[in-house]
Image (cartoon, rainbow, N blue to C red; front, side):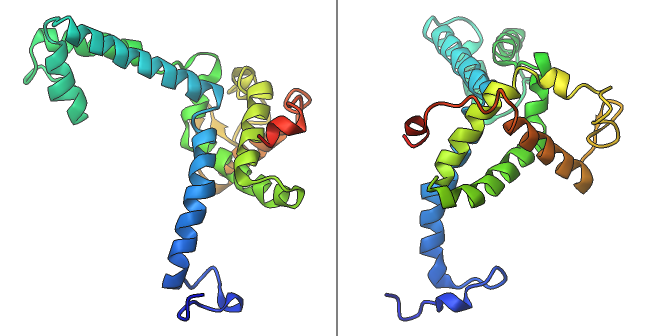
Amino acid sequence: SDPDAIPIDQISDTDFHSSQISILRERIESYIVPSLNILFRELSPYKNQEKKLKSAFKWLEDKVVQQSPGYETYKITALQNFRSTQIEVDTSVVRDAASEFEELAKRDEENGSKFFYYNVFQQALIRNWINLAKHLTKYELTPIQTANLMIKALNNSFVEKASKILAYDALYVRRMIFTGERVLINERAKTAWTDLVAVSLGSTEGLRLPPKNVLHS
């Protein structure tokens, strides 16, 4: 054991000792990173968007290989530098290449998918994961398994019905998470988003989960 380590009864949320760094790093790599990978890559809208983006990059690579005018220049001078094309800087063929790529990679916002990209929804996703992980450890479910369970439930119950559940004119969202079509971002709204996700997890459809052995895989 580390002779300089802080005694366990002195560990608190307010003080951090350097001897805790290695343990914290191991916990982050073992539990938090894999769990966040599930939360933000396995939920249907995110998974579909990732496929769409990969397909767009494959299309662009094919255009570069074919030596189509403008595509390699767009990839090297604009895309790889994380900048948008500009009339003052880029030729028309480069801007055309950019338009085609952006159309292929464009995020799907139909059927309520846009809600999944709001910060308040993503915060609600993380909050629910933290809350559930705390409780499910007593049933020997790891944080990773909890994230997996959550996403399976949300894909079953929430994703396809998001446009109806989050309709701007629904009484339970007025002045709680929306004002008209404007998204509220105060603490009350964040709590409401968290509660809405939690309720969806407990719906009948959401509870149609795989057998226990699948959840523990």
